[in-house]
Amino acid sequence: MPGRIAITPRSLSGSGHPVLTRLVDEGFEIVFPAPGKTPSEEELLLTIPGCVGWLAGVEPISTRVLDAAKGLRVISRNGTGVDNIDLREAEARGITVERAMGANARGVAELAVGLLLSAYRHIPWSHQHLAKGEWCRRIGQEVKGRTLAVVGCGAIGREVVNMALGLGMKVIGYDPYPDCRFAPTGFRFAGLENALIAADAASFHCPPGEKPILDDAMLSRMKKGVIIVNTARAELIDDGAMLAALEMGQVTTLATDVFHHEPPESSALLSHERVILTPHAGGFTEESVDRATSVAVDNLLKNLVRP
Image (cartoon, rainbow, N blue to C red; front, side, top):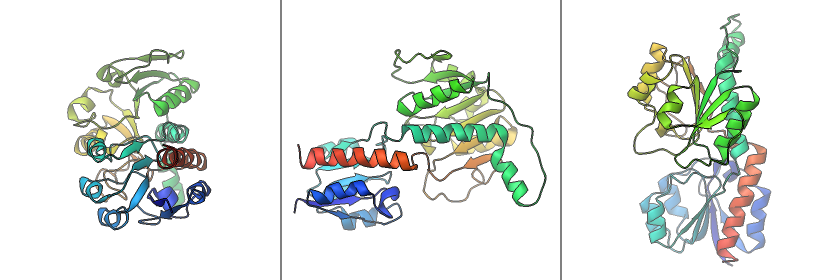
């Protein structure tokens, strides 16, 4: 038998996926370290040693796990983000890291736009009150003519740009490596601060840096009443600064699909009435899961069977 392959994404480790049979057909044994949930470091340490391949999710992959991963040849992500992996340490151990580029772009982009519209029309707030038998209304706003900043204009960000333009919004994009060939009518690139300061709403689609993008200083310079949508990484936002901005009305709504820990612990920020929460569901659509799993399996087989 060629060896074992660990499957850790929550979307796959509960009930599996038909595409995984391709691995079995090639003679690999599939193992699930933590079926239905994100595995802990200890669960990874019990399973990963002896595996030649790893179809990985967003769980942190520590140096301790990499040290124990004797025989591991490839980590294949079912998404694009790899900030949960120390790439330098993986390379030093001869482990190839592959990504499913663009596979979940449409799903994440649709959720981001859905969250944006939910914020402008107070959909979760309205539902909560009606479900309790309370007839309450908050006046909403239409998005047409408003300016959206899209921070990170890769595959997901470009989808968001096109959807927002279709809604009649003006869109300013920021990317450290802007693709000037991407120039739809109504869109322009700008520097990060200029894009955020001009925005009525901002949607984040980039990896985190050494410090949050939205801290006290940046939030204070943005338009009063700005809406923030984050389907990228929780580390992009300073939680304390965001809570203060919500309390002061500087930020009207934070809509987030990402958290420092999953599931998140209760906090003053996450329980705030002007925060909309979804459980890291951006890429959790039937179509996105199918595409991402297929690409991830292709990348495993490319490295393990057809090097």
